[in-house]
Length: 105
Ligand code: FES
Image: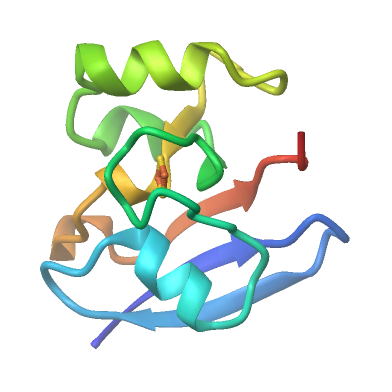
């Protein structure tokens, strides 16, 4: 097992266990943290929007055109750190990843 660090909307950091091949969204939601994920991880609702720590953002797989289209429409979109957490599959190079759940829209 590996770990990610998720800061909620109240500013509280949570250390979550995660395994290779898991979607970040599933782990965050299953921990009871507030990502609605209304499309179930299809990448079409943007309710799993997170802001990735700037030190970690360049280490993520490149964002797809489809993900970019949906996330750009979010009110709290930040070009240097926004991602859909359902579109990021964990691998061990991401052990210790830090992110923040984006504000509700
Ligand atoms: S769960 Fe809908 S875009 Fe990620």
